[in-house]
Image (tube, rainbow, N blue to C red):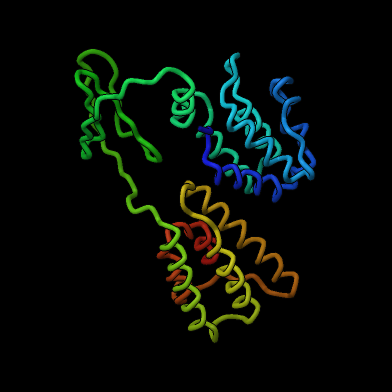
Length: 269
């Protein structure tokens, strides 16, 4: 079992290509065990080589010396993409594979002795407590910890606000379809090039995968896509403008949680 699902590996390869790092293989492999690097299979082209490298390191997991090739590779990739949208993609992957993460722990267990099943925790949703016999632990993913207490007789209380209702791919695509319909209604209220730019953006945005990605990562991709479309239209003579919040297309975009940063950019927020 690999550290990351195969579709995540494909997204990493896509990020390498979009960041124009396919020719930087040596830099991406810097600091990784020389014997492992020497044993990586050769590919016919640079893009395939990146995919094969990632797949091999993903399957390797942790080495005997405690190092993790994929984590080192991702750290190098982050260093090479500072300030670019791909940085968020590599950083999100690193969170999953660095030592101590849930993905790493699961991978390590499959290579060792069969682990005893853990006692089923009782989760108290209102307080964020997990009670396992006489031990208390708090497990929070993607949110802010309200309070933590450690040690005998320790107590803690707090509040954690969690955003529920993660957007599925189908829901995201439906949101985009509604936005495109709203854009048709707004046609007479927008400059022709602005209207064209929004149409192009929505077409590209619908294809962006939102499942199994963090909200921050998805929003970075959305904003980068809008920036690329805007830049192309400005080259044609489009005058950038702040859109009024009363436009139907703006209202439709506000309904989609993953469009948050894009909507802020459009309305000047």
